[in-house]
Image 1 (tube, protein in one colour):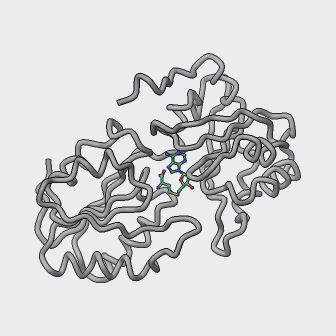
Image 2 (cartoon, rainbow, N blue to C red):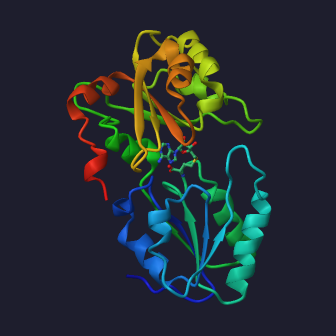
Length: 253
Ligand code: SAH
């Protein structure tokens, strides 16, 4: 394992939930950090793996609540590193997939703070595996687009229209605009009857999956009471879940 030097920041991913999905590097960072600055979404079972001397600080975005400004989070990381701490900045999933990890790393780079990027398993790939949905499958789908449903102004971003016809489309942070999402995908040429799924709290004990059609995302989510964090998956791979749904709550740790 690389040394975790004093005065440096590791910007690490914690995966979608199950602590078994942490990388050995992220686990080493958790054990050795003396400050853990984490997102609101981090699974409590993951935080429990921090070393006994570590001080935990929750600094993250949480939908619907007052969130710290992004520049305040980056400033805090720079401050803690400047004080000589080993700082683990822990984010859900992969820090560089819709996690603002790039913004924070750019801030550290600009401030001259040494950092390491530690990838994690992103919810839109590894989390879907827990729902029995592979993001690619031979002869079924050979391409996947990961897209955010939350543009800079909070609405669905233009990327949705540009990526709408990807063989498999995985939408993060899309729950707020499901009716508009269906409409934009259909307008771009997607079949309204194509299989789709909503996956809530993937890889956690509370995981729930609702299978539906492209045209019915909002109705299906409302009927099941789907809450964040949740993903939308669209494409022929969703139908493979009928044979690949391996997850059982009773066997999870
Ligand atoms: N960096 C994270 C994504 C952060 S954006 C990653 O790589 O996974 C937050 C969004 O990620 C949520 O709104 C949701 O769409 C998705 N998400 C994160 N964890 C999830 C989980 N366990 N189950 C379902 N969706 C999840």
